[in-house]
Length: 459
Image (tube, rainbow, N blue to C red; front, side):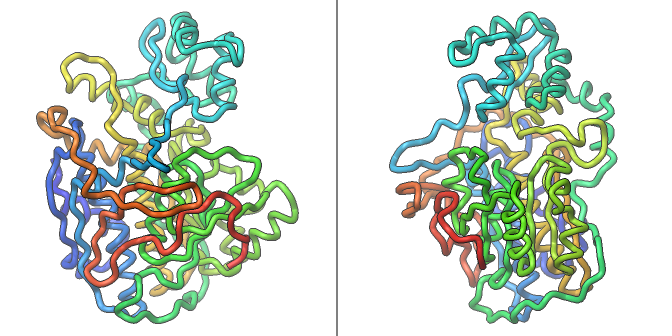
């Protein structure tokens, strides 16, 4: 099992940031901190620390002294659960039809949290909408082979995968494509002078003055942009009034403005271009190619706003036959072997999910880390930059951290010392406060979490 500081050091090296900054990192605790055979505490702690430390290193480039970044592993892992309540109510985060199903020759996981995905899966199973129950879907799935259902779902743009072991996944073309790629990429995509950023005093937050457009909706991307907001960035969440959101938006919108822009209209595209012209970071988690089809490819963004940092999230990376497939954390866990491996570690062979959506969460903090690192490069070298992160690459990295002996016997930690209460536009929000502790400029959220469309789309 790789030590957390060594993991942070490898991330830092991947981003080509100054090694001297690592002297200011303090990582406390060790796995297991949750019941799992995987080093999820290390993954949470190292990515959160990397994002915070990179933000501080950018601040140092702007004139501020370096400061200590301390992260406790248990707190970091609790932060990665995404736990919250609104007015004392803990939202149900899973649709009744989401989850693992037994089929003729194994298991299939279906993601049904969005109505169109749920209804599509029910149609594929030959079940009536609005009437069918979970038990009906379980019976119907027994008539399918796992890979047959996975392929049929993919052909219809649905989100369902067959359960695989690590060996099964490693033998697939997609698993092999993931194994050939680094954890994340930070690529220069154009020439540009360094974008002006105001110099910072030591008492100002590291990302003060940095403008971030957040065009993401499901956990990883929103968490990444929220991490930037926690360190002082001016983050604007862009939603379409036509698209659904999940209730976690109340938690992940902390620190952000929240505006509506309809990208399907010429007027909405013009509004977004005006925002781009004053932004430093453009973060997006659309299905691969979707924003490019609307004219907002990384290259087009760099041409319109030379010096911008574009951050792109995908489920399965940019290479391989699954590169354009939709996907979510729970599905990537299932397809790439984690559910099977946890079942094997438990001794009963029964597939089980990791205790949190750590692929989403770690990917989100890697997006924040990549954005801050690319901004540091932009300030020193100029240029426009493209950061790419995928859930499957994060999963491959998590495997590389090694296994935790007897990790599944660890008790679930007490969340209460890590919680904070705040008013929000959704109601009274009880959620996990940032686990990164900066010695001079504490992480936190200057703006209350607000519903989509509550702010005007202007800086």
